[in-house]
Amino acid sequence: MKDLRLWLGQNYGLLLAIAVFILMFTLYIANHSAGLTVPVVTTAANKAVLLALVAMAQTLPVLTGGLDLSVGMVFVLANCIASTIVTGTPLQVALGIVGTLGAGLLAGSINGAIIVYGRLQPIITTLAMGAVYYGIALFLRPIPGGFEPREGVENVHEDIADMMTWTVWETVPTSLVLLLAVVLVVWLPFRRSTLGRGCYAIGSAEGAAYMSGVNLGRSRLAAYALAGFLAALAGLLLTFVTFSGEASAPIGGTYTLNSIAAVVIGGTSLYGGAGSAIGSIFGAFVLRTIDDLLFVFDLPPLWQPLFQDVVLLGAVSLGAARVFRIRNRLELFG
Image: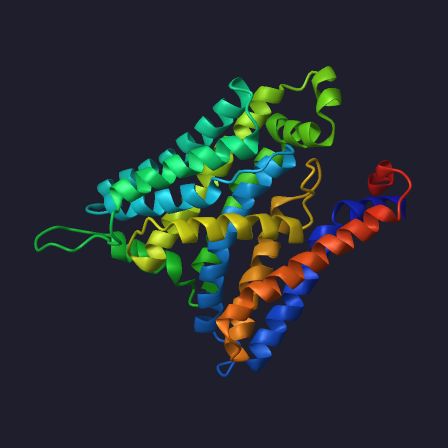
């Protein structure tokens, strides 16, 4: 019984996010004219996975007690880079994908290096660097555009895009398979690694983590570097979805704010030290399902921020109410 209480205490936010998502998605499917069909689920999944990847990116700095305000701009930058270099032969496309993800990893590493070695506040650092990344994106794509096929030039971009945005075995959306692969290959190994445990330790009690021998700088640097990588992966997927790139400040800002909201809805504490990227994924699914509900109920799109804020406020309030009920913070884990 004690182990169950411990597990529920550690995963309260995740379970709540899953329950809210199931309720909202069931309501969406029940009122959709086409019902539960592969095209409907695939379209919803493609939109949700984009935000889910950015939310996963945001989760890592938040676990350390920081906040990354540049994830949306790294997302936009990767979209612009991918729309420029992910073209041509299979080898060229592969190199373009590596280059896009490498650019995101570099951007995140720069953020982390400035925070760790420059000892600047994460919010100020990432806000400033976000403007830099947006400037680079604008330089690459002063106007929206993408690859234009030329006669006699082989291009597998469209084939990969179709594969990544459709289904596996004509049933499961490929984007969900990609998201699962990211969780299994990236998040879970990082969560169980020394660096991952260090991120949790920093967010829980930085002083105690230092006294325990945790390498604070290396863990924090890894969190921001991996955040840049995940944001770039989302930007790459956006290129496959839209076949184009756009240096859009509103898009970058929207994804940044929504990623923070998804993190909170998923049960990750903004104080750091508690939470999970999996919870952030379901928080992102909740936010994206709000758009779908507005569509099926034929409500004005301008109502979307209202519903998102209500859901976010509810999640924060439930979490706060739970904290107020305890006398000692350690009871959350005991």
